[in-house]
Length: 254
Image (cartoon, rainbow, N blue to C red; front, side, top):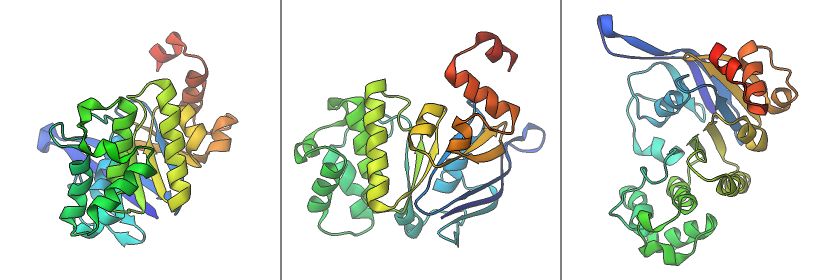
């Protein structure tokens, strides 16, 4: 469903040029939940932004559903893939009601029965129709992220790009959102590419995972192999060890 071949990305020009992705290769199957893990600055979110069209000066080959992606966003691409951002408050317009936020994509794409679709989508993510008239600041963090997920799904895409969708939430709410995402994926046979720094999230929801460091993919492995601590690369084993018990000396050494 998602194919990334030799993806490279740099910022700046000439002497100030800074390369952030180096020949990234990924392959995500249809209906799979695929995780991207690694330290901050490893390039995880950058890969998502290239797929979402937020960065368009990349080099390489990107494809979704066997259709090559151009460097420009079009309506077809928006119907096929959507992104859920890390900060549910920053990703929602503070002066728009929840109903307006969910209806806007339908208006842009000329889709009818908007009110009915908005209510149905709110119910699908565990909210009722009363939320249509509320503003983002009137919602809890978990409710805002449910709205963000609803907005991403309102166009019925086949692929969701998830940028640490639970990291800004309380632990108890994180589990609710992860369970919601898992249920939605099964109901719609959706394909997820999820960025996270939490290996517990990977173990809970993902089928396979790629480990990134310094803009490169070090290895790709299934979650059972990761949890069983049978990773090949020392960096991956360090991440697993750090997730089990934080070691300041180990962190300083890395």
